[in-house]
Structure formats: C-alpha cells, structure tokens
Length: 170
Length: 100
Image (cartoon, rainbow over the protein chains, first blue to last red):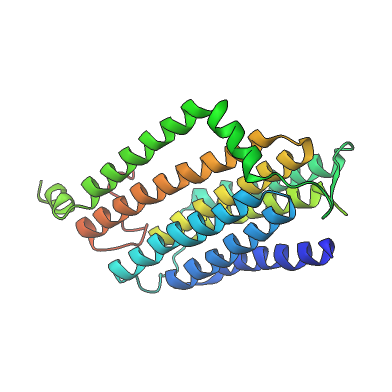
C-alpha cells in the first residue's frame, strides 16, 4: 500500500516538475507546480508529518500559487520565447547539475545506516510540534512574524503605482 | 516498507529539476517558480530526515522554510511587477541593464 502510494505520488511529483520545464506558457507551469506541491503534501503525510502536509496545501498550493497565478493574470504574461540563453549557463550550469545529482545519488545509495518508512510508524502530531515550537523555539517563531510584516510592507512599497516609472525617468 | 533513500533521491531529483528550470526558462515568473521547486525539494529531505531520526525540530525547520518562502514570494512578485512596469517585458534576456 505504502509502495503504491509512494510510486503514484512521486511519479506525479516528477511528472509535474518536468511538465513545468516543458510548458511555454507561465499559467501551465504554475498549474503543474500546484500538482507538485499537492503530491508532496501526500508524501509528507506518508512520512508522518500531518501538520506539514496541511500547511503545504494551505500555504504553498493555496496562498503562494494563488499569488503566482494572480501575477500571471495581472501582467498578462504570454508565451515565452525560446532563446539560446547564456553560454555560461550551458557550459557550466548543466554539467554542474549532472555532477551534483550524481554526487548526491552516490552518497545516498552508499549510506548503510538509513532506515525505512512504513505506514505503521508513529506520526508526529500537531500537539508535539506545537509543544516544541512554542516552548523551545518561541523567539524564532516571533521573529518570523516580524519578517512577514516587513515582507508585506516591502511588497506594498515595491508594487505601489509609480515606483517602477520613477526609476525609468531618471 | 520502503527505504528512506527513495525519498532523498526524489528530493535530489526535484532540486536538480529546479536548477535546470532556473537555467533554461526565459520568463521571469517561471524562473521564480523554479526557485519554489528547489525549496520544495529541500523541504522533502528535511521531512525525511526528521522521520529517520524521530526529531520534531526537522519538521519545524520546514515550517520556517515555508514562512520564508511565503515572504520571498510576496516580495519577489512585487519586484516582478515593478520590473514589468519599468520595462514592459518579462523576458529575462531583455532585462540586462546590469549585464557586462
């Protein structure tokens, strides 16, 4: 059962990620990213992280992707044109990616003491998570609220009408 | 029962697909989406290791990554809107003011 669920949702995840790269229209890429994020939520649930699975759907598939689709709609983003791109990206970037993936894969496959995952494993309940979050890590949690506030202020200041034109007129 | 290394391999594959997307995509919004894909790949390995060592803090780290990603998405998309206003294009090849 676990194996079937993993294969189905890992396959969906990879298919969505590859589809994101192949699509030329940004809205199709955004929708395939939603598929990736939702299937990742199921994988989190298989790993026993119930809070994160729900947070993944609400925050990522809900809030962030709505923001993305909203911007795509707002800017009327059309089909992207295929250009060659930078030569440095081709010459250094792709070999670096291949080498990176190879190194990680060999390290993971050579590691002997890694365990396995089963559906019967105990799940981390939201209660356990919040106990750690609000006792030991209360200060970082509060700092993130300041970060979010600053991000909202920055977003409003940047997207305000006129902030782009002023830079051009100089 | 499946080994935890499969989850780790999936997360590495997602991260590398994100890097490839960052390199080949020519639209500012899709480049930004590739960054989100990389963040998600790393999150999956955090959750897998939290399960492996029975540590709750790994999951809390993912929670913080989500918070930072939300802030990053808000600011980044605002920057994209400002860039679009200034240059009326989303193609990264035409946004080359600081290129040598």
